[in-house]
Length: 99
Image (tube, rainbow, N blue to C red; front, side, top):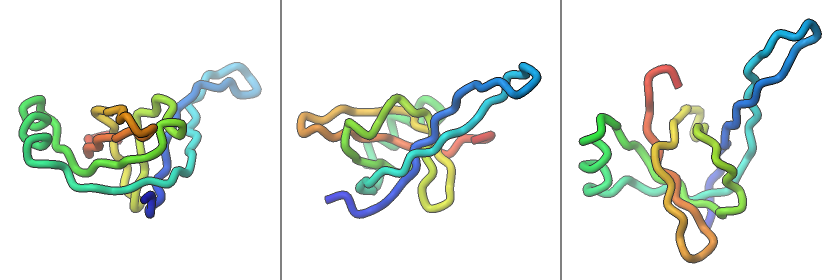
């Protein structure tokens, strides 16, 4: 059951009136389920220098390769995805400096 809302963040490059390239963010609202990170996931990710925070599960059709998510007014980076057999995708999120 998808009982929460998150915002997938996509970054694109657009040109302004005088031709300067500007990075622009576009967010997309998606329904999701929020779960805790398992102990084994936390251990494996921390070996790579990451601090896993939460896992979001949503419809695979909502995800288009975005690299950032906003959830509960916090910005997270997506460090790993897992496509399940039931048309859902799991997004593993971490807080990173500069995100």
